[in-house]
Length: 128
Image 1 (spheres, rainbow, N blue to C red):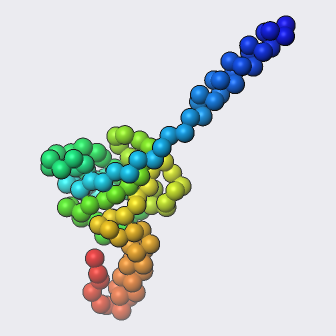
Image 2: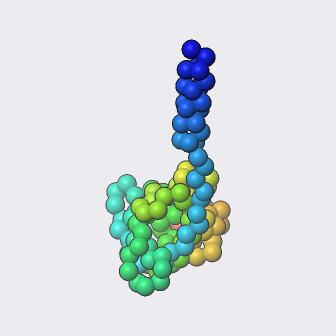
Image 3: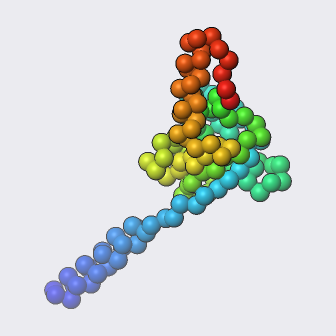
């Protein structure tokens, strides 16, 4: 019976540890070659390797960040997934999150959004 307990505990412990392996976040950078605005999110088609063809698809749910992204922009993000990615605008909360868009961090884009809301109230032109 003691041998059975040792073998069972060893095998179950090894199974649990194998399931808890840590996946590393990989930083990817891509150029936006197409975008489609849906009701719930905006889908972006990315070119990762620079050949002008679609390599990845990602979607962003927050609409006010999508106002500052256009075709031809470069986006860097961290992810554990290899193919389609649903990006979180809040950093480090999900498996995938945006690092920067055209070199602007999300904090700068949030500040730019707040400035544009103020300018819109006063009837001035907004900045991109």
